Length: 392
Image (cartoon, rainbow, N blue to C red; front, side, top):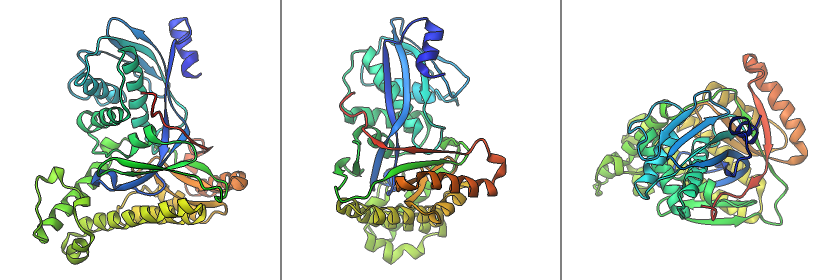
């Protein structure tokens, strides 16, 4: 059953509106947006849909096809503190939007995710899809920048995830067959078209069979370690610094890291090592994409994955095994963990001619190591797609 069918079952009518936001991948530029680094991204042709209708009494009434609990709150008075369930993203988005605009109208409907949860920024996608619907029923015209800002604030300020703007920016700005090249320092971006010389590619998503919640993972700890490393490096170099919560690795010249990096505690050094390596890989990856060299771009994505394991120290045993299998499978140009990299999934850029053999080999090899995940592990082959930009 999809969200439209479920809406019809509940409300005995066709939904008057559908809101959609795509999932995203970040081929190169992992774990750096919260440090104001540079990132790349592609939106996928699958994502979060909400079939909905306005409610003039101001009540938000939604259910998800992925979660059992039904959510209900008033747009004027959502709970001030998070409730610890999937709908916190909706509550947080309502609060942050209500701080900018007067909200009167609620909505009723059904939310559907087209892929399993974990690693494709489903949290940002559901937040943006909901914001688009809530803004529409309240006659609010959000700019792309406002949509990104409000969605991020919902995660940062309400849910408690210290994310940057990578996820939201990909889901808003991306365009089909164009690589998003985003500088999170000033949110300037470029959409780089696929070169006519580029070999064909598709995007494979390998779900480990394990889901995760960022707010309860090591995600925030890694962000704090990276900020602490930046703070210490600025202090060692005698450079100006302010509040640690406002410090990011982008403020640290690479020469300072090269000179003082070994003074850092080992975990902090590793986080900084990943940041500076990833900054360089993004520049290299963008150049490879411009040239149409998908094989080199894929190699750089694999290098990003390796650094995420060695220096960012992300990855469950399941994801590390998936990554290893990917590196040894014909037809995969490159790939890495998708998302925070603690559970969730891996993404890969693949040669479409090898799609069947890749699916078969990765599945067989993975389930040899984790037979208990048979029936939970899954593979999807996707295309790039447009983000929601211009529809806000």
